Image 1 (cartoon, rainbow, N blue to C red):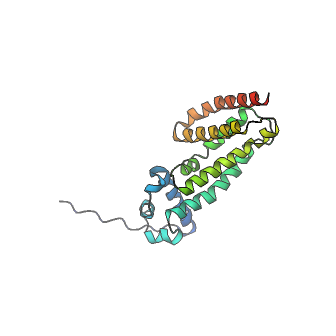
Image 2: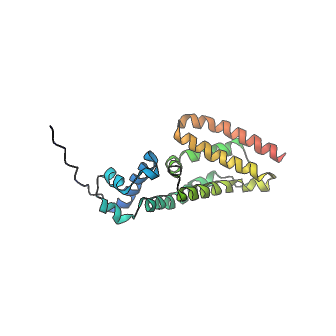
Image 3: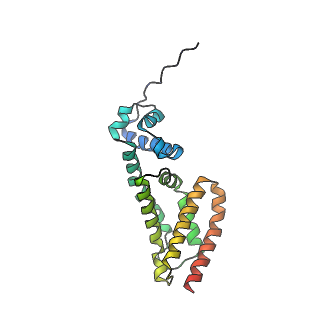
Length: 191
């Protein structure tokens, strides 16, 4: 009977970017397995490093998730800001461009939807709130149905999340159709 192989020796992570390596591994595992299924041992095993190394930087997976979202969500909004309409003028391209920009945020959207705990719910609600702020110019432009604008925001987020889970090329083709649909709805509400 063959003997069991010894476990691989712990790998020493690069000191200058050790924290980022831990966060990258955690993010990938959260997305792949779901947040609740990942423990600190899994992250150490993924990087072939020791648990004490992981605990040196983070006290728990909650701590890692908090760090990921705290660091990455503001950066995402900075990247998306140029896509947000500055006035009440809305076109199919406005929605399509924002949708396509969200597709480039694939990893972060999947991370936001990789768990169901309070931190996830809070961060998703905050994400939708910020995404919904782009509808404010339409209130000034004459759209007096905030519930419809909220539905447009939900459609945008739901379409982006579904697209990042599926075929990116097909999602890009559908972006224009979704943009035309939303633009027609906004035009109907302002007329």
